[in-house]
Length: 132
Image 1: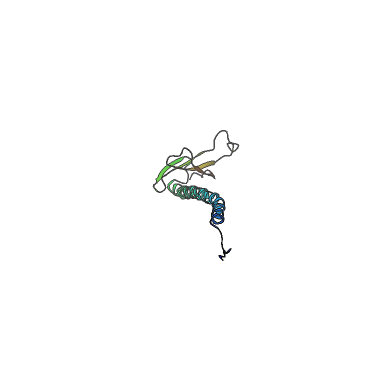
Image 2 (image 1 turned 90 degrees about the horizontal axis):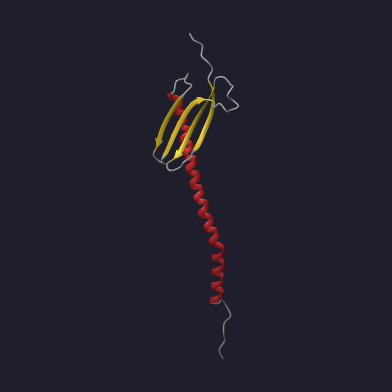
């Protein structure tokens, strides 16, 4: 008399279980890759904004207190970023154009190979100095 043991899984059952797990896990791995790419991109944007903020304060230190127009440019190496600082009058089409002694400061951070970059914009009031 030959007795067959019923304990354990058959090969077909194990293969079906592995296939189901694979079907469930593949989209999760793809999603993880997409999330990591987005995190890397946002990290570069944040780094450029930190460069822009630091450059903003450097440009302010280099200009005179009475300056109403000023421009400065700087290149960062890692990541390759072009930084532009400008101080100038409020644009003519702005609702703030009639405000006396109000100027606009802009810092633009553009990564190499991109057409557009992040901008930091700041309005500054510079009262007229009394002549002595």
